[in-house]
Image (cartoon, rainbow, N blue to C red; front, top):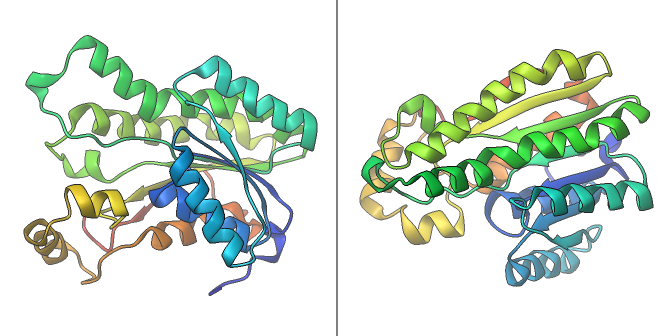
Length: 253
């Protein structure tokens, strides 16, 4: 453990898309801090791997909820069940997304709606669902995972980048409404992060070399680089931060 955030111990945290990649790393880092973690995903196999990894490290064990965040009714119901049984939510990390590559010509109306549903829609409804419990708890921290893709004008996935731009707008537009209840809301925009999936599908040697060339810092970003920012924003040490976007891209943009 590089940094200990003592105030995160026993804090109740929800993470969407926590079974693999950056989400899994966030779950692990919060558990290491002693937080009470609940994570949502549809990949049971990856979720089990994450839990087993955390068990081996003797961190606090997270609770996995098998739920598709695109099913808003079920997702909201699952969150409310946690609140009813265990108490108010302190930390919400909206992370679940998918950066499947696609061109403008390939997009159909159905595909567009699906991408927005997976990469943006559930963020708003999760925030809406935890708001009352955070007010009851006299505050909370909401962290939305975005991307630098829309800032860079990435051409590989217009629907995904549009959704990620929307996350930035959602974060800023809700800050004043939530702020009067001492609820902070911020977003994180990761750059090129070497998750297992990214490395397998897209971070090939040639592309990786190009990314490193364009970064100010000549290091390959890892999921833990993003997780450390999540810990900072989840903790009270960032109590003066809201309505902000924190870029973790090694100086790519």
